[in-house]
Picture 1: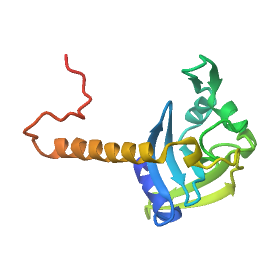
Picture 2 (picture 1 turned 135 degrees about the vertical axis):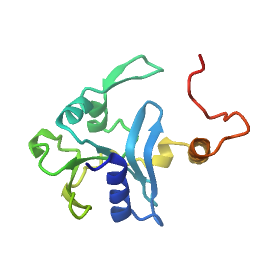
Picture 3 (picture 1 turned 30 degrees about the vertical axis):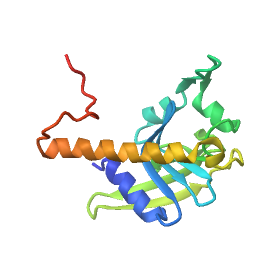
Length: 181
């Protein structure tokens, strides 16, 4: 069975230009998480949400968020479709034939994949390009300096996480998020 990390690796290494795009995986931005977030050289962003089951796909349309300033509750896909979302475009990455395309809102891009377990090759097919829901570049909606500092902190946290798993650290890892009882 293909793991999500292997799928992400296969996709970004076959479809992303690391010289021209910022490519982030499992990136948290305020109250949402992008499985894959791409920001191109012009600052336009594309979120790719991976769904491996029908139930996971259906649950994505039930996700709601609370605006901390106004207290307003809203559904994720209502916010995306009206252009009140940080990313310019949004796509689903799905196993081939898992979801009937008519069930996917028109603003969403559809990327399907086929994984051959015998050869361990994964092929991707762009079924529908996403519609741009607004014209504001990512950097107009996000502070670039804060973004870079947050990326650096995430990198440091991951390094310490990995180092802690493979070596005994002689100091307390400040990024260790395990609950102390």
